[in-house]
Length: 171
Image (cartoon, rainbow, N blue to C red; front, side):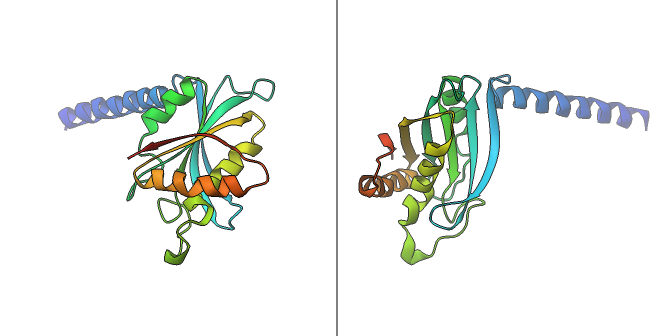
């Protein structure tokens, strides 16, 4: 029985050290704040996302921003390590669960392009954040996320004020 207790303590210590290590990696040792967001979008649906904010992004020194989207059958955590790295380099990053994925509202099949499947709705949110430079918002997506970026471009073109400064499609 003493032997099992010893291994239990070792396992718990390893789990604690691993959790602390993962937290340090995911926040770049505290230089990046990660927030879980859920909000009602301009399209009237609930969207879920992770917001990665570098400590250098402030109201006095707004940072450029990137809205990122996952591929089909994935979610906002798909490439979190990349998003932490972008935030570490000074970008505010919003990683969305597109409509119908993760914890965001479903999207009826006949409304696939609504809000750029959520990406353009996320761009609108980013433009309202006081520590984001609204003139420097980029969008990117992998696979189906690239499709969401493509859906977002005509929405931005039709808006009174264009918000998307750059697009990177990854397929």
